[in-house]
Every structure is written in structure tokens, then in C-alpha cells.
Amino acid sequence: MPYADRVRTVTPAQALGWLKAGWADLRIAGWVSLAYGALFVATGFALTGGLVMAGMPYLIAPMIGGFLLIAPLLALGLYQISKDVEDGRRPGLWRALTAWRANPYHILTAGLILMLYVMIWARANVVAFALFFPHEAIALDHFVAQMFSVDGLVFTAFVTALGFAFAAFAFITNVTALPMMLDRPVDVFAAAFASAMAVLRNPRVMALWAGLIVAVTGIGLLTAFLGLIVALPLIGHASWHAYRDLVKDDA
Image (tube, rainbow, N blue to C red; front, side, top):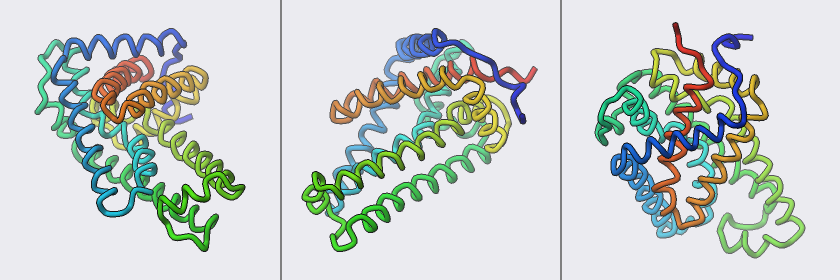
């Protein structure tokens, strides 16, 4: 299959090692990684507050889901920090924030595709609510009132399954794609194919890795976003090491 010769077979022990290596990068980078994580936490607070003030708190849950879908792009600067540590360079916040300049056209294309994907996800949530509750206004209090009804439970199960499908596709096509585009001059489609091949060659290990990402990110979300200051850099740095183990060098 296309790009099958570009990926390696890995073990569960290596997946756990990615977290260890990510933690080592976080300790070396110090405030640079934490500041990068804090920027996105502050943005999350601003967006949440804005939705509440605009009377659209029902969009907070889809927004969190959208954040998880677009996380590989947001972590681009963290990949750059890990790359700098790997190359023996001193990490810098500005260098991390402008990491897209390494492969601007294709990285920006990937960003546009992911933004479109998130918009489809948000619209799918609104359409699902309208289909299940055609006579209810799209508002948080109306959803809470229906949550424990039969229709509400079916709706919750449907949206959960839909979210899993969206997240699985995003993971398969992006687990190594953005680090690869940062590291070498490849386009978004080649990077996505290589990422898919890495998952297909290592389904159990990559399922474990996806579970670790969800667990660490979930802990960060449960701490009112504050834990993401550490969780985001940890997963971002670890994802760089996952890419290094999964995708062979061009040579």
C-alpha cells in the first residue's frame, strides 16, 4: 500500500516510552512549554466565557470536541520545541509559535482542512439535536430537561458514537502528519497517508496511544482546563517521539 514502506512496527513499551520522552522534553524546555500550554488554556477560557455571554453555552461541549480534533495542529509549536531539544538547540517561545514557517503552504493547508472538519463536526451536532428534538429550541436548558428521557439517552449515545467516528478519523490521518510536515517538505496528503499506514501497521499500539492521549487530556479538562497547561505540552512532546519511532527518515 502507498507509504507502507515508510513506517515502522512499534511495541506497547515504546508507546509508554513516548510519554517518558515527552516529560523529559517538558523538563528541558521548562517555561517555554508551559507558556505555550498556558496560551491555549487562556484561549479556552476566553472562548468558553464568550459562548456563555453570547447565550450559547450549549456549544461548549462541541467546542471541546472540536479542540480535540484540531489539537495536532495546535501542538505544532510543541513539536518544534522537541525538535530543537533533539538537535541541541535552545527552545524559544517565538520559534515555537512560528513553527508553521518550516513548511508554510502545506501546514496552512492542513490547518484549513482541520478547521473545515471542526465546522462539519459542530454542524453535525446541531443537526443531530434538531433531528432528535424537532420541537425544542437549541439551548442548554432544553437539552438538560431532555437528558434523562429515552430520546435524550438515545441522542447522547448517537452523538457519542458520532464523536468517536470523527475523532478516530482525525487520529488516523493526523497522528504523525503534522510532525512529519514540520520535519520535512511533504504535502498534507502524503503526510496523512503515512499517518494512516502507521496506524494500520500498529493497530493495537496506536489504540493504546490514543487511549493515553484521551486519559492525559481528560485529566487536564477535568481540572477546569488548568491541567492542560502541563497535559498539552506533555502530549505534544510525546507525539513528536511517536512520529520519530513510527516514520522512517527519508534517507
